[in-house]
Image (tube, rainbow, N blue to C red):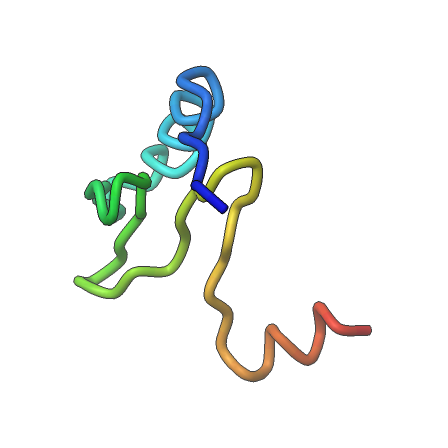
Length: 64
């Protein structure tokens, strides 16, 4: 199944929200916007989804 691109207005909202923090940088990876903090990818937009990388503590809290 082919991937669909993230809609431009969603990309702009994603960038606007994440770039409020000056230490966050954005890169395009595999055609998708990805945000990095201290060189580590922590969030990216994929089709209609936003994928966020959480540490173990935050994953457990989010699962509750």
